Image 1: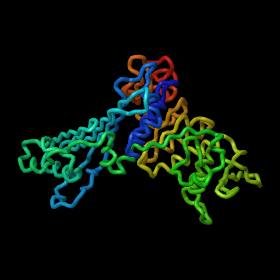
Image 2 (image 1 turned 30 degrees about the vertical axis):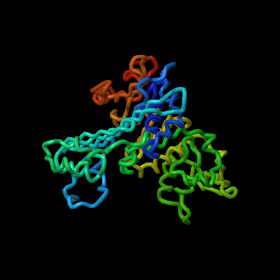
Image 3 (image 1 turned 120 degrees about the vertical axis):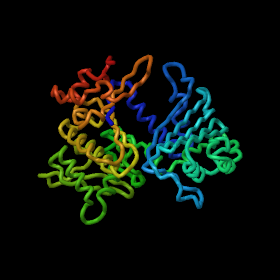
Image 4 (image 1 turned 135 degrees about the vertical axis):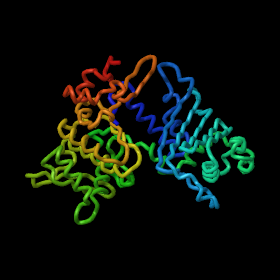
Length: 408
């Protein structure tokens, strides 16, 4: 998913909103909103947004992913079909004090058999069920104590109504039930690792604590530690590391090896072996492009095994257009994980194998930030490109799809 648009259109805001929702689900609290500053998040021009801050996402699972909380003779009757789970948070607070007032939470399960909605507004909870008996028992056993008697359709009969809880009562203010009910593997669909690589940060020594970071840091912190983990400590480097070297050679053909070295207890640096040079080069002596490409490739290769989101902002920085095109083309052949790229580079857009991957970001005074697929700007986009011989990135830069300063 490649986002293009002028400066200030809202590309980074979109990524940060996903990152914020992922942090709320991961930590099970609204603390990430407090830490960023509620008044900073919801401001529009000089006035705060009256409606508050709303974040939502739809998660997909192959089958009904909830697990019964206790054994039951009806386990064989549980629904086993594709499901979509909608999660939504609405937070209202004050711009004058560090206080988050009303927190509205919604979790909705949707299958071909029906749906179940649970909504918590402040301390009051309500539910709504639509479906058959089989879906009822699935919901009932997976979410015990959260289904109210009045939510059971009359057509399912008094026996099921009697089985429902008399009342779920009230919950403590600020209690977040959505993270508790979501399976971890579904919640990870909204976990975001966001990178905006910086050459000076990539050159820094890595500390021992960086070895516990899943990826390199947002600006490239811990690069040496990440390479050390990937390379491994066997006599021969890992296959994954050797494949990364081959990819990096497309950016810098003279590169032969990268070796992490310990310069003092708990500190790692990278040394680079270059063809034709006896001595190894330190990480302070290689080009910005090599370090940026290494950070990009490392993040993408490691992320291919994840089900979460990797967001990379402006990967074109410091990388030559030719290898950049090869890198973008290769990333599209992977099937795991979700990659979001924000860019101002027609090279990145030209490397897309399908116009379906391009999303145009524009901002107007009336509608604010709007993110729409490029194909909705021009329904016959694929055919137009094939017949005209134009490239997607060139068409965008010329203003044919919007997403340019002053464009519609």
